[in-house]
Image (spheres, one colour):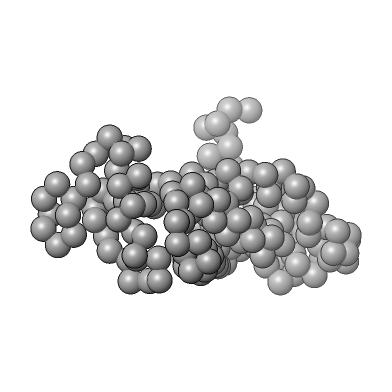
Length: 179
């Protein structure tokens, strides 16, 4: 079968065919963004208080730790999401009717272990992903001169300088828009 055959089969079930598992994906993504950026800012501020010489590298490490924590929190939702997405497109052949039914069935089938199967590679991937995400966020902050209203703002210029030099971009002075 070809890609076009798969598209036709999914489309034959209407909108539901295209959105199968979407509610679990939305729950995971919303909670992950909330937890990631909250944890990152909390850890970054705590690091700045404890180590006034907090560097860009420390922030990247903090982003990795925050993302690993988020993965630990959201992994059970991911299991439900992927289980629902793997269900047949035809509602008559599905094992689960929705998120709650899938969670109950997954727990009945494998207990708590069913919700953490494959966690190790996900944690390794999330550590790297957190580092990349924070690098991008900090580089964008530096490029756009977005001030921080937190404890670490005293150290912000140094970090923005490091980020800007990593991008090869001039550092803009706060409030002026000029390099």
